[in-house]
Image (cartoon, rainbow, N blue to C red; front, side, top):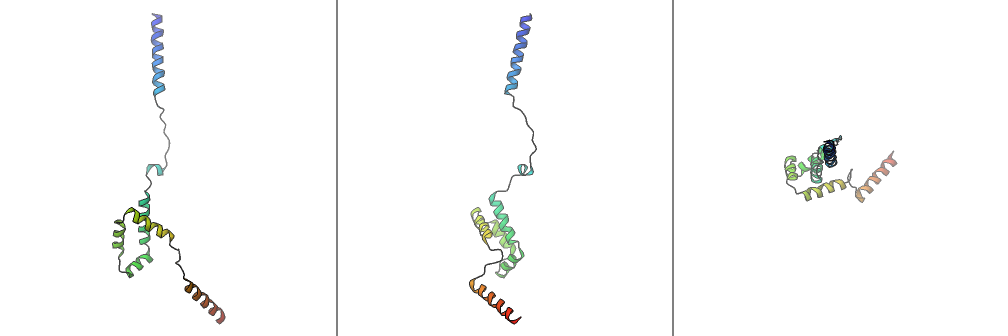
Length: 120
């Protein structure tokens, strides 16, 4: 009887150890908001960049001068393919911040500055 109790206890302990060895350990960690909400794709970021560019006041004025309303331009951006939107976003990134001056514009500015200095 004592021997069967030891065998039974031994088998139960062996079975419990086998079950514990196979069980995975559960972990709970805090996650940041960037992990909870998926990051927007590159196409979505490019489309948002182009739309933000079109929403600027000086761009809207320039488009209206060319006969294009802001609503129509926004609709056109929505219908562009991912490649077209990506190309536009890259062009927006390469645009000069204050505009580009040609050589003749630069010479004119220098001449006006010299004339103002001579008059004063």
